Image 1 (cartoon, one colour):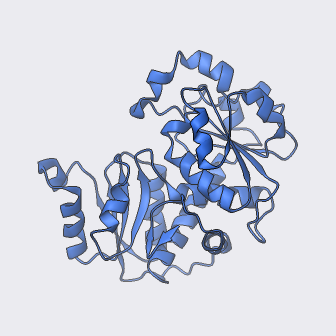
Image 2 (cartoon, rainbow, N blue to C red):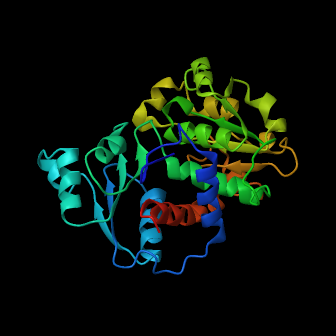
Length: 302
């Protein structure tokens, strides 16, 4: 999970480290000056709303100064490499970097060339560790598992364009480390049997899973990563794999609905389900700020 002072992925999630960070986020005992006189650089080379804004709010809420940089408006548009850009920012005296990129492995690559902490805010189809931590925080709070963050006995079903999803990959590693049973579900082209190599179950039958899931985590179709090419029609997808009102009504008592966002309403999830009492989607968004505060503090040794 932590590679030195870098947070790069959840493929090697450490339960003790994760529980310590989740406990810090849940306690929300931040004073507002933990990172006073520190500077955090947000290097976002891919579009983002929730992650980018929540990292900015988190850093500012800890007293840090924020520097925002994207590929447009930077020297990368003139041909500067990713590493040269990272070196330049580091040389100006920033204390940590938060990196979002469309290339898998980008955060890892930067971490190998700088001395300051690097937090992966999503790299291609690879990893998104702080989203997985945010989802775990939400599950623990919603299902009463905050004492020990032990998810044993919980069944989490992740539904949708799994093969394109860095969120799914990070959640698989983290949730399994915390003790949850994880099942992936979707059409075979988006959720092939080979994904079982990640240590989870794979199914193409959503209706069989709905009544037994404690958590239904819906994923959008990632059109920008070719997900649309694997889709016959959005209407057919919604009928077969969307969380419709009818399916939501078959969920067991106390089960919750999640979505890491952005949502495509009436494709992977019906709007009335997203806005229902089972939905903890807004809690996920709110929890993201707390998790990213804890991640920044841990990365910088506070």
